[in-house]
Amino acid sequence: RPAAASGPRSRARGGSDDVVELDFDNMEDPAGADSMEPEEKTIETMRKFSNQYARVTDTYFCSDLSVAAVVVTGLAHHKETLGAPLCPCRHYEDKEREAKNGYWNCPCVPMRERHECHCMLFLEKDNVFASEVQHLELEDILKLKNT
Image (cartoon, rainbow, N blue to C red):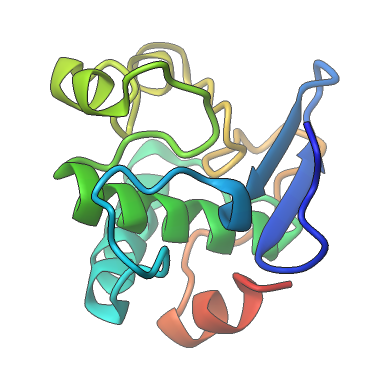
């Protein structure tokens, strides 16, 4: 897949050699909106959800906090454009259908059932990429999401 020359991106390698790469410059915009950037209030909603979910499930954000920032921003974008926080780390033939289905809406079924987060947003303590962080501030996300 061709990469954009610039813009918000994040890449991290998981324990099973999965590569998670989000490239907001090349994402489709299902709502046809001029901007791919979600509103700050929606990012804040997804930040609060992520902080609470990490605490309740005793999971941690990736040690590269820009991964969490980009994923939270992607969830916010899907919340605005699809009405549900569809996992931004997967490819979908039909995003609207997938959002209605709910399987990949965050927290997705694999996360709820097995604590397996494809996005590396919620990691178990023993994951080599896990930080000790379970709480992100909005300012951190806004700063890190473009790194």
